[in-house]
Amino acid sequence: MPMEETTTKILFTSDSTQNQQTICDAILSVARRFKGELIWLQNAANAGITQALVDDLKKRAYRDLTISEKLGEFWSTTSKSANDSRVEMTFVFAAPKVPGFMGGGMAACVSKFKNPLIYFNPSTPWVEPRNVLMLLDSHSDSRQKFYRVSVLAKMFGAKVHVLSLSSDKDNETVRYLNAYSGQGFDYMIKKGIPTNELDPKEGVDMVSTVLEEVGKIQDCWVSSMNVTDGVGFMKSGPFQYYCAQLQVPLMACAVQEIVGSGGSGL
Image 1 (cartoon, rainbow, N blue to C red):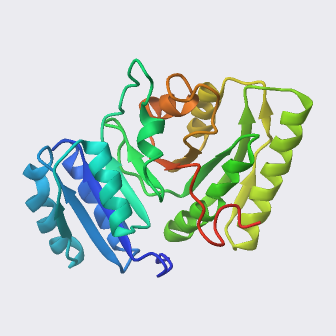
Image 2: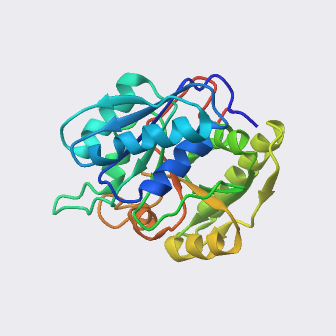
């Protein structure tokens, strides 16, 4: 099922020449579902594989890969290029940025993007998503991902699994977890997307719970907000651990993202 043509550009980049085959497979898979422009953001660290990516896509899909060359700090340059080009998604293959003394790990990197990125750490292989695990928490901002997840699910013909969870377990948290879980399920059903609503989980360790749920679902991607996944997100929040430990692609959305009828769509 091809992606809706509201999506005009998708950007790919990496922070090294590693995982060339994974990147080739990702670009090819997207190319087969998407008629818009495919862009490779070349930098000093990944320039060594640029021509191989161009040749592979031309050989296997008869498609062109646009090359955009930028220099500078990897995450800042990538986010600026994605925002300036107004891409729908950015596929990033990179080692997770470790939080420094003043914080600023992966959450700070993702917060610079106006649209979602699909993140692959070095141990993440390419897999076409037959399933997407959509994580929600007790904050209303987490509903911003509904629209973006629906686009991804339609692109690959994937089933969405809605999971709301929190390390807190007070009555208000439980109420919101249940409410947003139901809203996420209803949103996907209205979009014609096969959807499974998992039981909300309160008072749990969010990282281990997500890793456990991912292990139950084959060919799965995870969708997570980068800021609302826990307090202290800059240094110790679950999002940083998702980036480092998940061995499946992670769709990360910045909280400030508001996209017309997107967001929660409610």
